[in-house]
Amino acid sequence: MKANIHSLESFGTVDGPGIRFVIFLQGCPLRCVYCHNPDTWDKKGEGKYQLSPEELLAEVMKYKNFIAKGGVTVTGGEPLMQAAFVKEFFMLCKENGIHTALDTSGAIFNQTVKEVLDIVDLVLLDIKSIDQMQYRELTGVKIDNTLKCLNYLEEKNIRAWIRHVVMPGWTDNDILLNRLADFLKPYKCIEKVELLPYHKMGVNKYEQMGMDYRPGDLPALSEERLLNAKDIFKKAGLKV
Image (tube, rainbow, N blue to C red):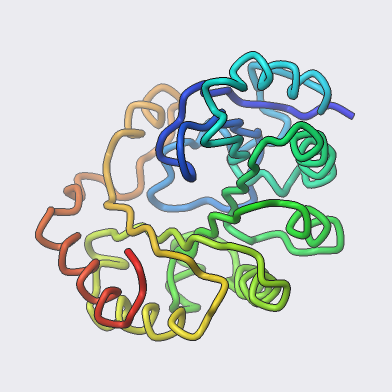
C-alpha cells in the first residue's frame, strides 16, 4: 500500500501542538471557495512522493528528536480519501511513541474512517460553516458527514480541536458565528477552537494552474473582525 503524497513539512508549528512533521496527502472531495491548495484536489494528481506507511515512518524518524514534544500531523487535501493508509501509518507511529494528529473536514465517514479516529491522538476538525446551505455553497458538498464525525468524536471521547475559517462576506457574520459557538458549546470532546482568518496566500497557485480564483479581490480578514469572532466564542465558554 502506497499513498500519493503532495508534500512533506519537517517543522510545522500550526497543525497541532508542538513542532510537528506534517504530511500533505493528495486528493480532496471538497472544492472550498477559499482553498489555498487547489493543487491537492486531484487524488491522482502528481504528488512529490509515493510512499508506503513504513517508508513514510522512516522519513519521520529522521526528525524524531525534533518532534519529541510535538508529533506527526496528516492533512491534505482530505487525508481520509486515503484512510486505509492513514490507519496503517498511525499504527506505526503509535508503536514508536509518536503523537498523531489528523486534520480533516470530516467529509468522508465510514467504517475505515472510524478505525482511524479510534487510534489517533487528536483530531483537527474543519467546520466550514454551521449553515447547511452556506456549507454547500462554500465546499460543494453537504455538512452531514462532518457532523457525524463530530458526534463520533464525542461518543468515543476523542480529543478534538475545531478549525473555522472566518471569511469576509461569508462566515464573518455575527449571527453565524454565534450559531456555531452555541452549537459547539455542549461538546465535551472539544478542547479548543482555532479561528483562522481568511487570507490570499494561495492566489498565485490558481494563476499557475489556469484557474479562476472565486473570491476575486475579496480583502483578507481584518484583525478587528478576527478579534470580534474570538470574543463571540470566548463568551460562549469555548477556549480560543
